[in-house]
Amino acid sequence: MSTNRRTPLLVAGAFLFGTLGTAAVMSRVRSTTPVAAESAEAQHGNDEHADEHGETEKHTDEEHGEEGHVRLDPAGAKTAGIRVEPARYRPVQNILTVPGTVEASTERVAKITPPVAGRVVRVLVNLGDTVRTGQPLVILDSYEVAQAHAAEHQAESAVQQAKARLETARAEINQAQAGVAQARAEVRQAQTRQSSAQVAVRNQRALARAGAFSQAPLQAAQSELSEAQFELLAAQTEVQTHLVALQRTERLFKEGIASRAELEQAQLEHRQDQARAERARARVENAKQTLARERRVFSGDLLSRQAVQATEAEVRAAEGDVQRARQGVIRAQQDVRRAQKEEAAALTALNGARQALIAARANLYALEGTGHAEGSGGKITLFAPFGGVIAQQLATLGETVERSTTLFLLENLNSVIVQASIPEKEVARVRAGQRVEVTVAAYPNVRFPGTVRTLATRVDEKTRALAARCLVSNQGRRLRPEMFAQVHLAAGPKRSVILVPQNAVVGEEGARAVFVAEGEGYERRTVQVGETRGAQVEIREGLKAGERVVVAGAFVLQSEAQKGELSEGHAH
Image 1 (cartoon, rainbow, N blue to C red):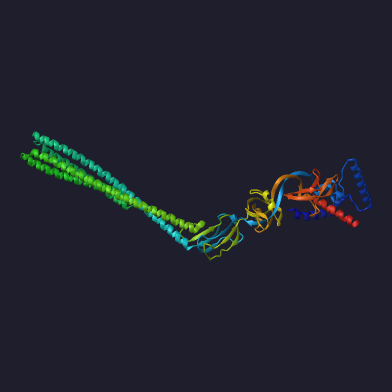
Image 2 (cartoon, rainbow, N blue to C red):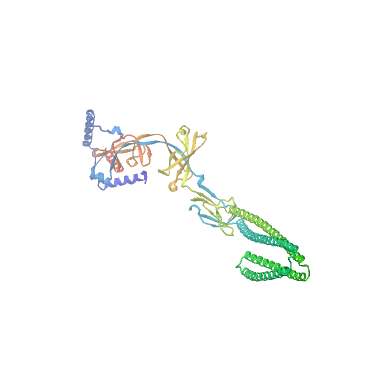
């Protein structure tokens, strides 16, 4: 409660206290009766006599400009709540006080506008509501946002399709590379057979020249036929085994258990088995023909030539196998290149789809702003960018709004800007970062702390003052824009002054006083007050350091003094 509000209550309380019996414990020294006057004059003479001998010093009524001495015994002082403290010098800062105007901080004022055209479907706050950061304010329905959501979903589907295409291409690459490895293995096998056949040709020719052939070619032909038949049987067995495996894999693939890569691997193995079976079958036929030929040769004189021709035929067959195997390698390599091209195309398509998705989402976020929400609808929510109060509400339910339509004006008055006018001659005493205190007429006893944020670059040519923008903490949001204010800036060196609590000072402007404890009473002392500093007030004249000042109960004493003055006036 401020001093101005307490004063009437304390004065009324003091009168009531006197009415109920304080007169029993209080008595005034001064009286309107002749005896009292004579006593006062005698006392005055004694005081002057004491001054001449230097034994004591008394303040006369003329020195303090006002009569008033209240005597109160200890019990009465305790009942009245009297408390005294010695007056002391305290260091204070010189204060520069200049006029100012309260403004809303531009950093804490926001016009809430929609990021996209739409229709207001729900208003979530009202004028004067206090909102927090991120609180939803209004919901809009926008056709553009709905289209943007659809474009985003379409781009997401394109990305998934491109990923599937890329996975298929990579599976084909793996399969083709496996085919290349298999074909190269077949080339090595055919080259080995070719080398063996070439060695056999040289040996047969040497044996023929030496005349070493008898039944050996026939036996060799029979042996070759047996080996070819055995090889054919083994190849047919593998064909049957892998056929069963292929059929099982096809069934599992249809049921979704086996992958396409497993199916294609089983198909490749089956084809390879069939190729080996065909080669074995061809070998059997060749072996049969060779055996028949050897038998004819054995019956004549053509053994040596037949043996050589047989081995030469094997060489030619091996050479054919080598050529066929090499062609298989070439085809497999071509398959790899085709699969790699498909992979590159699929990767390009995937990157394009991803870029399209990024663009679609960027467009969606640009339309929705901070109101983005998952889903395919066109509804967006606008949120409070910071905590504050809804100063204006322009949003109307069902209204169609554009991007530039202001829906709300949001203000945060937790801190405000007070623009102070610094006289030209005082500019040197003000700097950015300097601490200030602000007061306004509506709350005269409340000081709002702040700091000087910026200074203008030039002096106003009309007022000859420099504008200083001060950031001020607005506790309770009591400072309102366009209020007039007083800005108090600490300037210059500190100085020592006598400070007393504001409750110790009584009286009206121009007749301020304090009560000083003297002996068994309290003397009313007229003082000249200076600046108020928080709960303390500066005493410039009328009080000395060390004197015991009434800091609690001064209004009770003031009431008693006023009653005494009234009584004296009636007596006169």
